Length: 202
Image 1: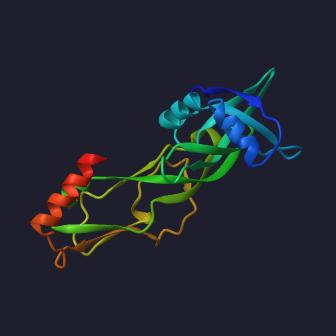
Image 2: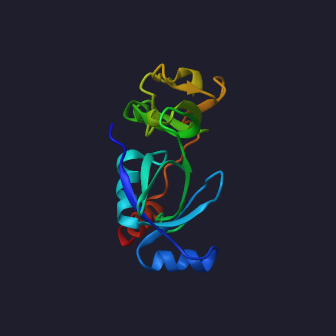
Image 3: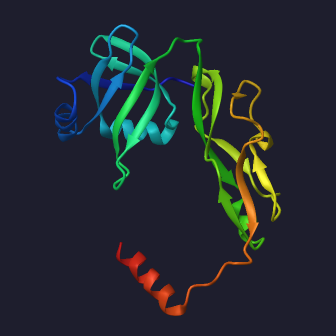
């Protein structure tokens, strides 16, 4: 898979004021954490949003800074708590054949079956830690819940992953449990209507 490239620009200063100035011109403030000197940069928001949608929050990318190209991995993406817009990104340079440790989100599939089993899913963990080649980090890992029965749990050891991927999270950790819905109470008609009305106004 070809490594995507994003143009980046050095930004002046550090701290809140610098970040505000960067966002005001349509860029997302970012930091490339280098062993010698950290690079304070800005990346075009629309280009970054596209990359995150297509490649995920652990993407490998080429950061183009003028004549300099830095191969880096996204280490952390910070989102606004209300708008869920990207507000900051941390990047770490990586070598072509290096291995990395990172957290990968879990994508739960087969939930349509669960919804018919009169059970309620209780998610305990929605990401796991893995180690693999820098250019082999998956966007997400599937957890197939279609065979989960009421009272059972889906654990890390139940995940099916490629051999090139090493899971570092303890195998015994529970990702999700399917519990009986015996205590579930349907909301009163007036409450339900009120909720639906509020949803419609958002």
